[in-house]
Image 1: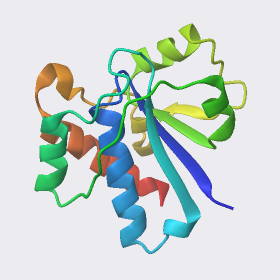
Image 2 (image 1 turned 90 degrees about the vertical axis):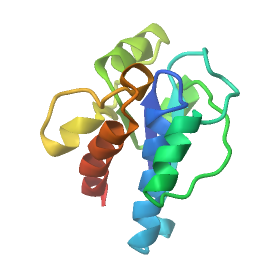
Image 3 (image 1 turned 60 degrees about the vertical axis):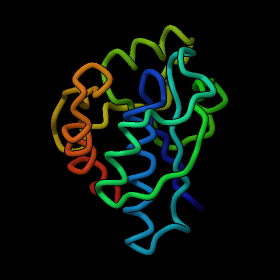
Image 4 (image 1 turned 45 degrees about the horizontal axis):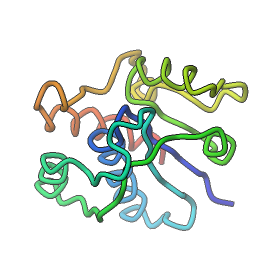
Length: 146
């Protein structure tokens, strides 16, 4: 049975798809693709249908992380029910989940950086422009899922 992982950020065009594609690479490099299903979604509707932000693509490309065209989409209750573990990029995402009516009754949702013992947000490159910092945060946290 596959472990189903979902990464969530506000718009699903920067942090969460970067996490999705980096995690897919880590899983593939470890020869464990059959063990995981990995995806990403948004808490908002602002970017629905849009592909990953070009600077996020550029950052992944610079680090040799393959990616493909995708469309941002918003998390639903059905998604919550489907995925085993849901990692949000920041505390605002936690608030948005509650506004969407998604209550973490099964304890599936956590801040991504808690995987490395830090109760902090993943740096948001939409505001900082620092995609490298975001990539570093993801590179620190994601390997712990293996």
